[in-house]
Length: 540
Image (cartoon, rainbow, N blue to C red; front, top):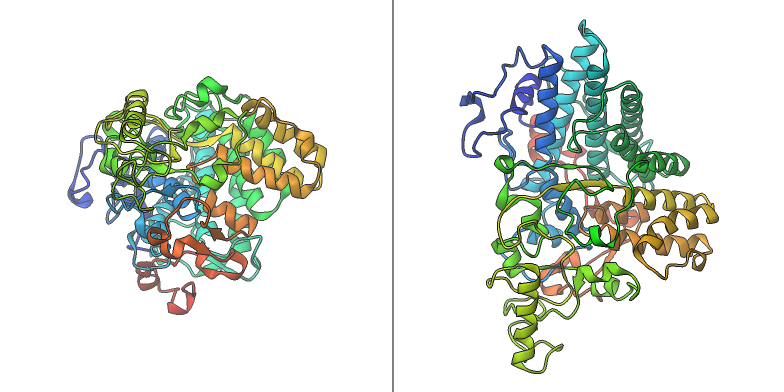
């Protein structure tokens, strides 16, 4: 396995979350560390391992050899949406993710992005393996606390393998799962840790299904989740719904999604417009409750995506919604307020060559109106005078303390997503009325004029479901894998994206005929794993 992952050393690393990214992990002994021998000795210490995983979802990575700028879901949620075409960059900014949206990073086996995505998820798998195997081989009392620990370990392992198989292998619905190569399946914790060859996509999916079902079984007799950073039974059902959706198990997806959202009511207009900066929102099922001392500031999710964050990435490069998508939002849908189509283009370095003054911005014909509009946005949303604005910029994500670098929570799963999974699954089953009713749960909450009967065929339902996912879940990390599931390519011609900036990411053929939707296996893994050779690498 990459970097010769030693299971017990990785277990210790999960709790070393206060280490500076410049320190050498193996030479550091912080006061809150536990030894490798003690890591699995008690339920309390096993929970510490899981706490480390919760933090790895959003915080700077303390893993040996990992790049802190690719920190868990904080990085990969917006990166996948940049690659999937849902987030539009208005300029090169400070260079963040330029190579991702240009479709250069994930096809480079030596890139940090490719390596860290793989490495961090196998770290989750290794840590979960150690918990699961130690309990199976030991003499622990299986009480509510241990059921909770085992449930989360199995859920995390299912989540990690699902992330890997969707990204480094051909999509289940556009490929041949029984024969397509997947990723190495690692379940053991004993030496010599030399990893495994690539199992098929079908084999990995079977392990994922076994894990998530086992997780749910444990959760039924487990103590309650401590907070939303922990995986709960609802989050486990949500993971199951995502897994089933990605493989076309439509009834299973619909049923699991309904169970996942039970008890998590959809937010109203006032809550929707507060900025998606807290897991306290009623419909958040799973998310990172960010602790101030453990955030990653200029590598945080809000640094990448939030227009008010006081960082160079956002001051010069506010993130946009596709103008083509935005213009489909009805006037009766309050989500239209989450983007500003007439924001003045104040950045002279904007990639569409329309920035810098009213003379180049087609929406303005005089200097006063141009700069008055900029000032109004800056004042309304709490940005600094160093922030630029741009047409179609997002104000969906807003900091609790705008214009600062203060941390905010990171949301991984909402009940709105589960409603849309249920609607999609029922549409694909041909259950028109069931899909209409599911879609109406969200549509009527967001749009005062929503009429479910306008979508009376499978095709019209799917068109509306795709629209709703792209608007409701904008910048929440789904578009890259959605395109694979739907077998849809990229065409940014009418989005507002600049071809000079996007280059190869401006247009890509659909996944069923285009192997570039599959990420390269890290070269370091090919070099270190005796069971893999260059012949096992994904080819383009």
